[in-house]
Image 1 (tube, rainbow, N blue to C red):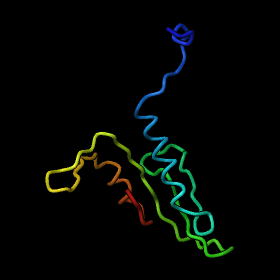
Image 2: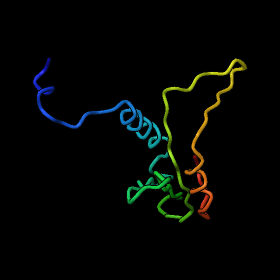
Image 3: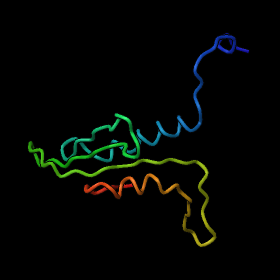
Length: 103
């Protein structure tokens, strides 16, 4: 037993760790010369990032939304494809926005 088990502290969860890993993998895909990646942190209801395109030193105001989901329970189907059941509330939320979205 370590000393921290006797102190009431917040615990990490595997879901939280997976979310951090997913965020860390997503951001480097969009290099800073061509994109601005903005965290959507204010009362997030289904959009994690708003990504804006850049051209050289110009902000273009062409944007799209990203909803990031992570799982460690997906398994390959017999035919080599992958299937995953997801809650549609986030997709419906993205569809109500006039901007392009990635889920």
